Length: 218
Image 1 (cartoon, rainbow, N blue to C red):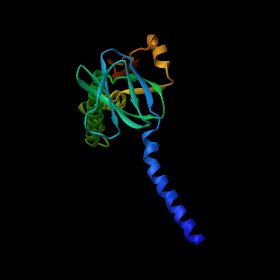
Image 2: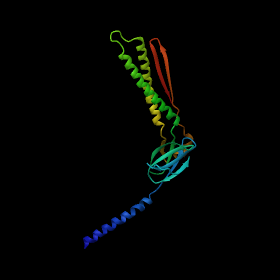
Image 3: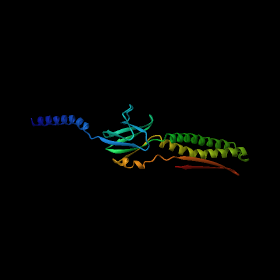
Image 4: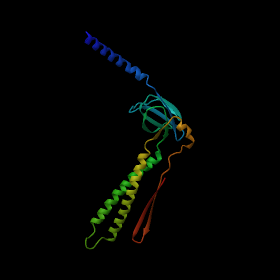
């Protein structure tokens, strides 16, 4: 009889804990997020992570109340979606949002494509010109010119491609900083826009060919 009573008491305790779990989940504390961007005119949409349907939007600066968890913060400007980034909410905080630089991203994409094509074209030109050189007579003037041009394209592509792909990757998505509550508001006057990146190339002739130079400023 005592064993049966203990078993019945354990069963009741398990049922009570199972029924109490949803109540604890519903009463879990919610986080208050103050969202502020580094440029005016932004609109935000915060939805659970990997949710494809749209959610409620708010205009910068705004306040979002949500339980802890993983979310996707979508950034819009003038009705156009600029990108989204995953945010892990653990408690109340300030979110400082730097939107992606669309122009810089497109410039980086062009540089990456052109640089990759130049690198491959220069490599092919050097290889074909070298294959046509006679072992005893050496290379002709046209072949040496082709090899110099191929070398310039190879070096130029080797510089342009990585810079372009990095610019493209870093400016495709918004950058979100999670700060203590009140930090973004207190430092709002010090917010700055992303720096501009400028890439310059130069070619100069020389008595025995030419020289190639590249400069990156940011």
